[in-house]
Image 1: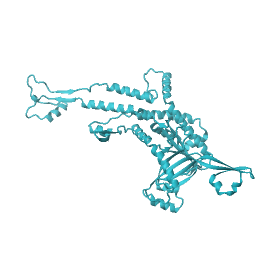
Image 2 (image 1 turned 90 degrees about the horizontal axis):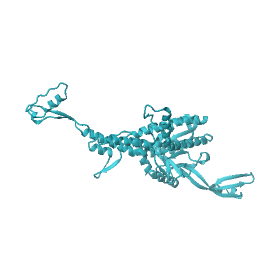
Image 3 (image 1 turned 120 degrees about the vertical axis):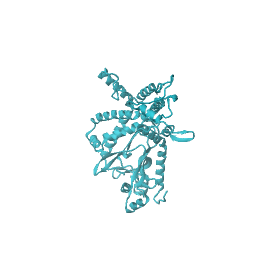
Image 4 (image 1 turned 180 degrees about the horizontal axis):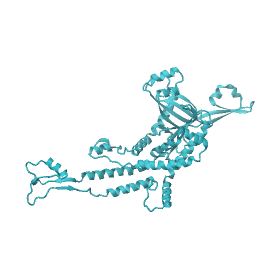
Length: 450
């Protein structure tokens, strides 16, 4: 760590609070990375230890001379649920207010919500950051997608609505010009930052913390009004001491921007309407604060399916396929076996060999792989994956029989949506919270902090 005279006790305390929450989310980030790997095809990346050597499953399979095959079923299921959500979103947006539709168009919210839903299925968390200000010269309320990889929050929280959150924030990775534009107050700061961050990238922790602060309510009888001020302000101004006053406590949201070294760049009380924080986030199911995603529920079935098709491929490769059995007695001294193999595979080829009475003729052997029930096991796994995920054939557009009526197909589709309703309704509540935050910001002055 470089020596920095601008590091303060307040900045260090804010950084330590952020790091404590960040470290508490390490297991979640590990699970999210694994879920994302399985969703996008990296399905043999789990680390195993064999004979004291640590390697990935893919490396082990290749080391054993086999091919790590996979059939990515998870990606198809995620696309199906995302498609169902987009249909629901299109229907819901028809009921939105004109101002909501205008902000949605400016932010490209159909695509933002679509990608956020995909993240929600993979990791079990959706996070947006709302702010009001100017972007590309246009004044408005803006939405930034926040990766759960960079987000942290108070892990003691248990309310799925987020009502008991007391600390949350994110890690920003800013290019130096953007960092200077946001935090350099003068030319001295600009030059200092250029010397300090020569690699061109700066990590900044944005922390929002709910704090309890003493306040004074002073009764100004002369002007018939009540004046509210913090305790320190009341102590610095003796003129207020002559007024009747009441000491009280109030919870306020306070923001901190701090570098990875502990330099406090900016701090203050929340400028947002109602004094809240700028984040809208939803974790699923958040039972006792735990997060379990849609993808995590079907990884075991995906792993077993991959093992079955890899085993089936190994059995097929291990079986005889066109092996030529050529009797040793039929080989003459001047016969070239390479020539025999070439002629055997040719159309209208001719091979001259020595034949003795009772000697078997040369023959080619081809055997099918032994039927050990792998096909049946695969069918069971595919059915289990549909049952566990709730995405059955009707929801995927499949028709079990040509004679199925339209009413029966619609009923099966409706029944399949029942198992997905919990996760879809949870995300709908995220959209409702997002709209409420936007409407709150729309009627207030700029709240842009970075």
